Image (cartoon, rainbow, N blue to C red; front, side):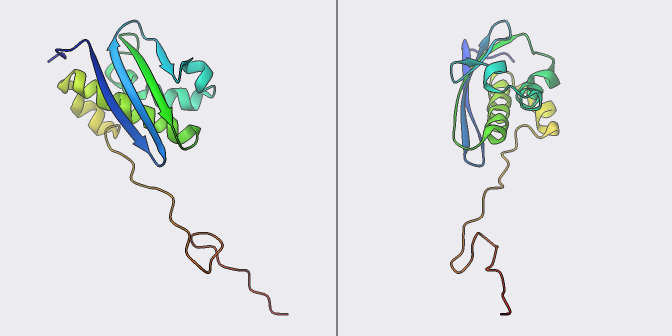
Length: 132
């Protein structure tokens, strides 16, 4: 069942990165923070991550996607965008859900940085022991 609205909005998250995704019928243009996909994610590994949900359902050239992403590093941002695109696609057409769910694109990765504990250098890194 196709969406009744002209566009869908969704949010994708990963660690500290958060991506607000807007999806609408178009010709396959992806804009991230007012830059083209190639500019914002110059490494093909990141581009492939972002495009994975669209490739999985075979709709790479059917949607124009606009994204505002903030926080985290580039890899976390790429995964947040992927999560947001997958969620927007499911809102657009519920029939995409089983395919995207099986691939793991709808699951928010819960792993995050562990907090630093007192008496330690980092979360688990202790002081170096010195005999003399």
